[in-house]
Image (cartoon, rainbow, N blue to C red):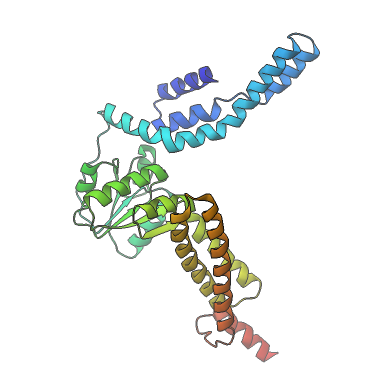
Length: 315
């Protein structure tokens, strides 16, 4: 497995891939394949190799396959961020772009998440300075008409050049949570007055950001799941207004709960007890809010509700 990893990594380097692509390629394909089980079974039937040795080989194959997901996780969390910084210091031919803008908003990371925010701001005539470290993505974005600057947002020099000292807002939307957190640590230390809006993949990422006193945290899994839940309620006959209000209230209560759980997460027993209590409290609050809205007559923005009433009246 180690030999296969080394060969794959060298092949990727020969093809001049980025360090993140090299590591992902090598770790993802370094394990033994399922076909090894077939070969070993065939060898045992023909008595080509001893059964004990064949069983040992199959055990190694199985262990390498089981270990691969954990290796990919270790790569994402620990190896890649440090390897990326090392590559940045050793390569002199890939310097950061010269930034000739001074905009009120700076966006670090322009993947699916960051580009959605950036396009919304642009549609509302808000100018943004966009930073990204993925050269392949930058080439594609520039072909699509976006003005994106190449550079590592964990570097203080780049943040100063981007205008963090005068900017009103910094949007941290980098794909890698570890790198995203490093950027925020630098911002909090050197630009304490700069307001930060940051992306978080899940609740665990949000806990780390809460430890750094970040107020505006946007969890991907929370908002998309709540939007689906709102649509599900509407499909089941709930008013659009009531369903949307329930969704907003759910987000509000869940964000409060997340900050409470962040303080308890290092004590497993206290964490589990708090989760149970907060879930029950959250459900009670949502039910109370729902029942208080049953008698409400505000349907002004719920066009579907008005259409249904009109159709019933005509019948």
